[in-house]
Image (cartoon, rainbow, N blue to C red):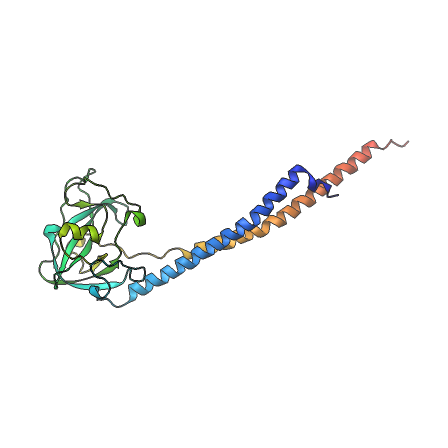
Length: 263
């Protein structure tokens, strides 16, 4: 009754089913791995954001690469802003997806080293973004700033091309190495996204805190793939039994038609 399973159609269908089962199982494990990664990242970010702020030079120094464990750590720094050497970072968006600039201002520490401070987002003056925008001034004199420590931006990590020939005082990436060369100073590795003091008039617009990644979605996808893998053999059996039933019914009808009519 199941000789039809040796037909070309059923052999191909069976091979496809046998390939789908391990593929779906592997996809489920991949999604579970992503779930664990995102859960760990969310925990790391949460701990960093709730930790007490520490002086920035405890975590970074000139030439230092900010690690994933140091990212988002709350830090403080005391010194003064050097607005004469301020630059803006092109093609940055705010929470409303409006395109503008991030304001990157050198912050000279009491020991003479420089910390790059991202003071926040400002709108572009026009679509061309060629002219240096009007940037609200930060507090003058010696102050203490608080912010989240961030790693240097690179093209590989961000996908942002580091274009050359930009208008004066405009950059594409926030990178301490590049800024150290431009400023001719000792620049601490990474930069700080300022959270305090808040700007007067809410401008620049401070960078929002990072949100949690949706780890639960990856967990749901993992379960979904495993359910799919379980459905494949069940579906194969259902199709085979239906085929057997249809063939048996067709054979019965053929037999009835071939029998002579009785008087």
